[in-house]
Image (cartoon, rainbow, N blue to C red; front, top):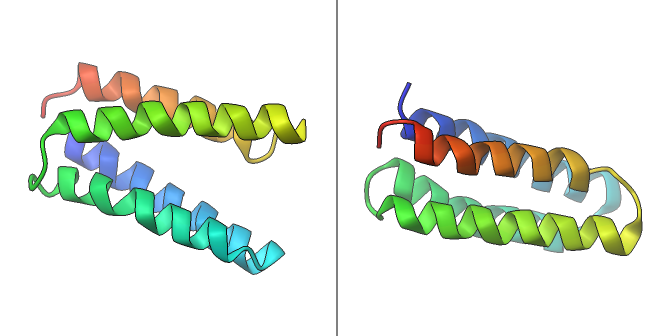
Length: 97
């Protein structure tokens, strides 16, 4: 498996989470943010942008989800997304580009 396959999986889960936030809470911000974060990750997966772009964005998302979890005190969706994002960040260093 290469990093592009892993990025596509993460992108899918990111978009699914944004869609779920929109459908459950009518949060347009959740939908827009997930699409906005998915676009650069998709561009990296397609080879249009360098891998460093995805790594920086994954780092940002890990911090973002951590701050959201700290602010709300609710583990969902923060805790799973932090774990998934950190795992994806680690995979970006371990797998072939």
